[in-house]
Every structure is written in C-alpha cells, then in structure tokens.
Image 1 (cartoon, rainbow, N blue to C red):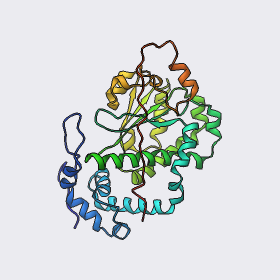
Image 2 (cartoon, helix red, strand yellow):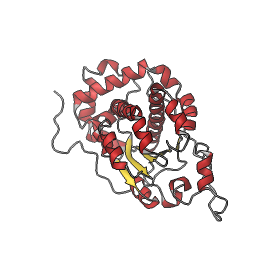
Image 3 (cartoon, rainbow, N blue to C red):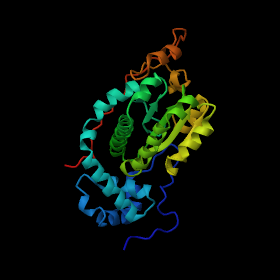
Image 4 (spheres, rainbow, N blue to C red):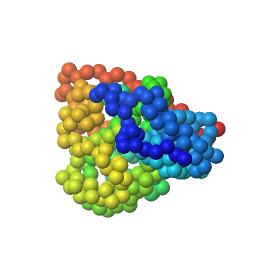
Length: 305
C-alpha cells in the first residue's frame, strides 16, 4: 500500500530566507513516497538507472505525494521523451533559431539563492515574423526553452546539493491587444505547453516575473487563465519597476540589465539591436563592465540509454 499523507508532511521543508532546501533533507523526508513511486506498476517497468531519487523526488513534490499520479506522470514523461528523441536532439539547433525570433536567454548570474534566471523579450522583434511561424514551430520553441532550463536546473541541483528551480522574467514590452487577439492560437499553444510541462518538467519554475505589463493585462490574464495550469498562474508576479523585479525574482538590484529598466549595461548577444540602442545609449557614463557570460553546459541527463 502507498504511504499515507498526514497534514502538510509533504510540504517542501521550511528554510531560512536565502537558502534553498537541501536535497538530502527532501529525499529523507519523502523516502517512503519515492520508494512507493519507484515500485508502482504505472512506471516501474519504464525506469532506468538514470531515473534516480532526485528525478522521482521532483514528481513526488509536484503531485503532493499522490503516488499513482506521480507514477503515471513519470511514465508519460519517459514515453514522450522516447517518442520525441529527434526533437530533443535538436535542442541546441532550435535554441539558435528561437533566440533570434523570440529573444530568450539566460542571465550570466543567478538570484540571491543561486537560481538561474531566464529572460524572454517575445515582442521585442518584428511581430510579423513571429506570427508567420507555424504552430508546430512555436510548440517546439516552447519545448526547447523549457528543456534547456530543466537541464541547467538539474545540473545546478546536483552540483549544489539543493533543489534549484528556474526564475523566469517575461518582458511584455511591445505587446498590443490587437496582436494578442489576432494570435489567440499562440495563447492556446502556451496552454498546451503548460499542460505538457506538468509531467515533463516537474518542479522547474520557482516564479514567473512579468515586467512592463500592458494596460490590458487583466484581459490577457483572463485569456491565459483559461488555458494555463492553475499551478503556473499562482507563480506569476507583476513587476512594474526594477525594485519589484528584484523583490519577486531575487535578482540583485545592481544586476538588473538596462533592457529590464535597470542600470547595468550588458551586451547580450540575444538581445535585439534596437533594444540595445534604446537602453544602452552612449550617454550613460560610469556603467560597470559586464562579466563574460556564464557558460551553462546542458548535457541531457534524461535521455534513455
């Protein structure tokens, strides 16, 4: 019989501000659940040596100790990765194209808690080009962004011994209501990606910080709420200024790039030239020199061997 949950025993361990929970503590606290999932008939036959305690822990935490749901989600994830191995093998290639059309990249520093930060400026380029891409392209683009982040978080978790999640910053500068209404299929695609992410990328997102929200953000929220998972909606924070970005994300105030409203000039290769020209003007004396971008290597620990 699967272990019974009592009260909030499965809740992520309370830790002091600035610390991420230790994997050893989380695994010890959830050992009975991890073992029950590992032996559950829904996934036992699909597990391989690379599917270790950390892999299963993410599902146990995401599904609040529901052993059958955790096991079923693992089965779906392993089968999906097997069936879409060709797409996963093209992640680097996809990212090279995606970042030019939907500017997305990792900041070269982490939050105060050591969590990586992924920034997207989806409306900073020619939206006509953005809109001409097929639904399948947008679907694969969304998968590639999440897969890269998931691999990075897994790598950092194993290196630090703590449960590392991703902080996302979505800059909505340039988004118009006309575009949003005319491209409702793209919103629906985000809904599909959100549902897929529940079993492909458990415990990936720490928070989503939305900056420069348009005046019709409540309308956009309603559109998103109809398709995005409730779990993701609860993690969205609206930041109207750099101070709020720091409060919600944990990004140090002196590391907020100019294109997010801060003072730090950073010549990121994935930020469109027109955005750099607007924010990194020559009339900004005394700016700090940016460090070389952190090299995140992203080996795929989830591929079946």
